Image 1 (tube, rainbow, N blue to C red):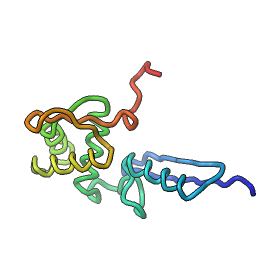
Image 2: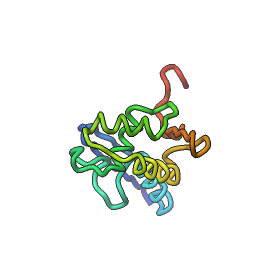
Image 3: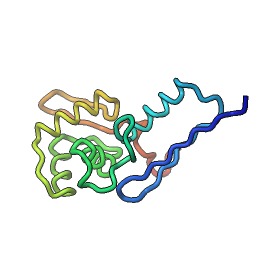
Length: 138
């Protein structure tokens, strides 16, 4: 049996193109793991379309928060208040602190973030596997 290929092309709302490819023995388990990776990297829900909707207006608050974290806090610890402030500056719309906290907790559950500190001094960070490498690090 010839090797199989799986290729997924995604485009975010900024026009950036992402191409993910898998070659070789493609099994259901490998496809599931592959799609889980896409979802953890910010891809929509299973069966959804692009990595990010075509315009920020089409994005959910959850997706916008993910985008804020990836853009402004890729390798640093941050608080829910800091994310709230950047979100409101970036998108020009208010968001409740309780909503931000709820979504951050969901991102922790889904493996997108790690959490540290007590409930009164909680800090979050993008998982190291998902964070871009620092310049000069190998």
